[in-house]
Image (cartoon, rainbow, N blue to C red; front, side, top):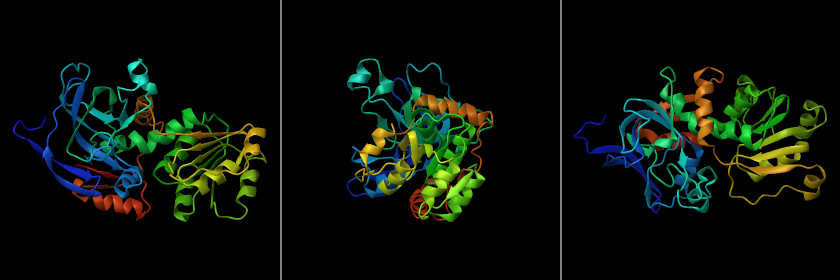
Length: 351
């Protein structure tokens, strides 16, 4: 537990008006009824964090602590929390139902229409301690490193939920994955674990294409190649892809993915983009019974499933943590991720 006399902690605080990130001393938070305090052991740096800092994604708070993929040790439990105990190792789901919308108040929080994201709507884990509702916790086994457990709560869970639930990917179906970064690398592994075949990976970066092959893709293509459509048809027996996933968040990527699917194919938008969606002829979508699906994040059940899959070595994320940094260096970590210095999969801070 935190020292009884410890009243402050280090946290990275983002001023949304000034658009400035400062690591400073702030009060140690206390858990309220139904909440727990977690001593943060690891928290990933995500591109959505970078988008918060550059203003392309917004927080409703004047000042917020970012960080939404984290793990740690329970430090204090609030009133009414019976299942969890101090000292347990946990991963934290990066969001919670708002508790106020019509779905939440009607007993359907899993269908919340104003879902609150950790590090945006409430303080996240770029800090020494974080307070969260007890229901977001997943117990992690002793042999699972905190750094690996942390990235499950977005970098792995988001593509997992996108492929399993939104795309409804099935064994022996073909899948194309555009963007082999932090999400894409895990999408390749998950698709292979699910029995998809063939797995086609697309990236303009040669090192990323090579990494896709190392992580289980059958084919890695440069999406700028003039014959890329012909290559897709050749690798899918002339049928086109069953599932095509935009993990980048750019209309040009989504448009290419949509044009690559066959009859009854599904194009899934996992990467978020503020650009208007333009996909070409709508007649094609109708005649070929195709679908365009948006996807955001994951549910708590997905994090629980991934802890089990990684804990029993059905899925290996041991190569996914490119580097760990101190909390004081989090701004440099964000810059490194944005500039793709060293082609990182995930950078993780260890407060």
